[in-house]
Image 1 (tube, rainbow, N blue to C red):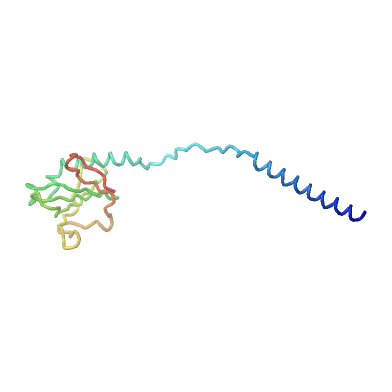
Image 2 (image 1 turned 90 degrees about the horizontal axis):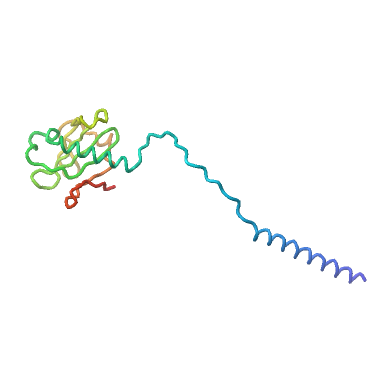
Length: 165
């Protein structure tokens, strides 16, 4: 009889274990994920402009620069030049690369918008193409303090300025 009782306890243990496994499996399989609420974005009042707005502002600035370029390039370059690249940097600094007499870009000027006003650009420096880099030949070299960041190049076939980076 002792042997029968042991068998019954063992069988009962297996049955209980199987029942527990079945309940846990049912709970896992029938459980549905709780709905997740995603908070709405909050306007933080950040003055950080949208990338598209910055691009539009840069295109307007390029147009203003090009209209004033005859007054901004050095006197010896006033007759024959063509802007090829325009770099925007922090601090209101802008670098304009240009070519003389339909050659390769061999000159650059550094401009600054004193108060972010489109109607006033101040020429800070003039650069000539050096052996490895631009060399400041007039004014103060600001490229290390305000390095060029956003490059725009003229797409001649499309007749428009396009952001390159």
